[in-house]
Length: 305
Image (cartoon, rainbow, N blue to C red; front, side, top):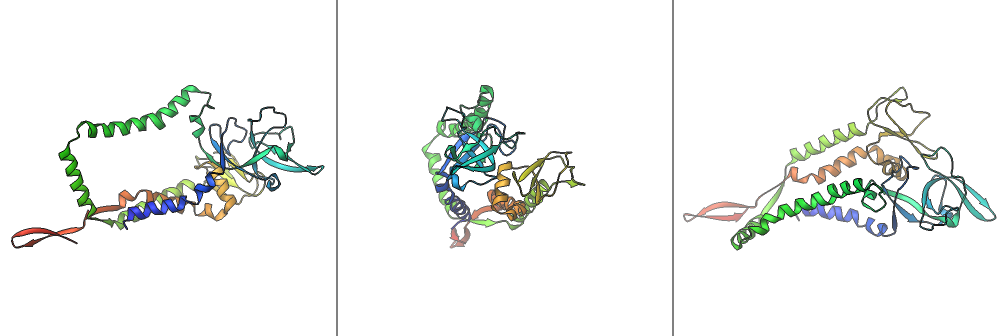
């Protein structure tokens, strides 16, 4: 089996366990900034329907506000306390970017589910984006421009099609079928090493005397509710923390990885380097003919190498 096929097979196998899980998630567009920087306006948040009895302090949940008559309206905030009255659970909630808690208690039957993942800025493609100009520009650079590039690439092939050229392409494909893949190990090692150095420097925070002295925001992870804090350049860190990393990935992604296993973040530079190296296989994978030319009775023939 060719290396390209193995890479594709590995990617498919990694995605297969996730696909059934995705069918259980409900996407919703973030409209307000009450949860910045956990997720931002324009992001799409994926919600997993959950039993309210399983909700704990610190979970980010989507719920119908008890004072809202619109059943399609959801608020996604963090649970900061749980109160039980007459056998019913009520949740105190608060947006991470809000100074005060929400001025109501959320009954357990109003809770829809937990926020488990976010997709940055994809909500700008939906009708929920009030800025028509921004929505048009987003469509332009994510759909129209790539689509036109594909059309312009294929148009010359359609206009200048000829049976002769088609036969030549078929012969060329037969020749390529007899080729073999060669791994250029110096290039492979170079791509991985450059990626590792890049991501190590990119993710490593600059903290001196409890102050963020770098040019990037630092995401501090610690126990508590919420279990993270974003320290912008020049700001000071207050209290202890378990781990700190430059905030170059969406905050929710990093926090969720930390909640799954903190050791994942410690090897995040290695994981990203491996992923980039695999995706950059055209740089270190070369195809060459799998046959050699030999002379037989004053004629040259080819044999499989």
